[in-house]
Length: 391
Image (tube, rainbow, N blue to C red; front, side):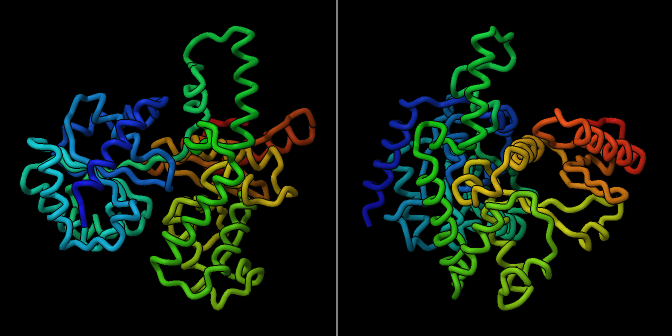
């Protein structure tokens, strides 16, 4: 295999990428201080959310020369750990003298963590991206415990979406800018924040294709599943029904999968590939959280719209998704809650203390609705000892 040609072409692709519009992700501020660390830097997240660009951007901003290889390249399919040293030697030829190496989607190579660990022991700076939480965490925990720093990335937030369109929330807005923000809100509310969609790709086709790729390449092929349609049907249902409360037994009655254990594995695969986020019901006793019904949310409004049924795509559900994406990006744990039959949409917790109670409500014109939301928060404030309440 001509590694040199492949790696040179990959370098050209990156150079071409930076001729297009690149915005500074909010996570860039978190990531830049990590650059000086000798630990391995890992960025994880769903496919196509911008992980690769984040690292390229951070290294270029810091004026650090680096070597790069993208293992999510069909020409590198089938690469084994024993081939990694040949690739490394080729990188040294193309990028002579560099001490920083960036391995994109290296999780595709079985045994990659041993190779990366060896390079770290040699004093090299290593950056890694991956789109499967389980594979990354398992391999990192086994061989790189205490030797890595990890950052999780999501599709564009609304703030990042505005930045792409040259609107800064920090500046005072004129009437015309306010009108623009409203227009862009509607667009984000329809199509979500995957970078390619924001840049102009047709959302329906692009996001359905992305879903199929994740299903087949990252789950079915990796875990050798015998019934891929069963998994895809479940995935479509969950992505199309954000905030659905469930137990594994109740969901299995709907889908009649082989067993509850199989259903649990399917949902674990969806979470590991960052397609869905799971919310547990908050309880001060951690064991109790695992016994209660859970909620699942899609990772992005756009992918929900592309795969969900129109009858379940109301503004209220999408607003919940938008709020959740902001909360997941914060350095807090997120739950939902229930107090005396009143539901609280989101509860945030940090260091064992409830920090906020949040109700998502698309419209408060109806007095009954507003009273119901406030009553739930009042109950929650007393029960969870929290005074930071928001509708």
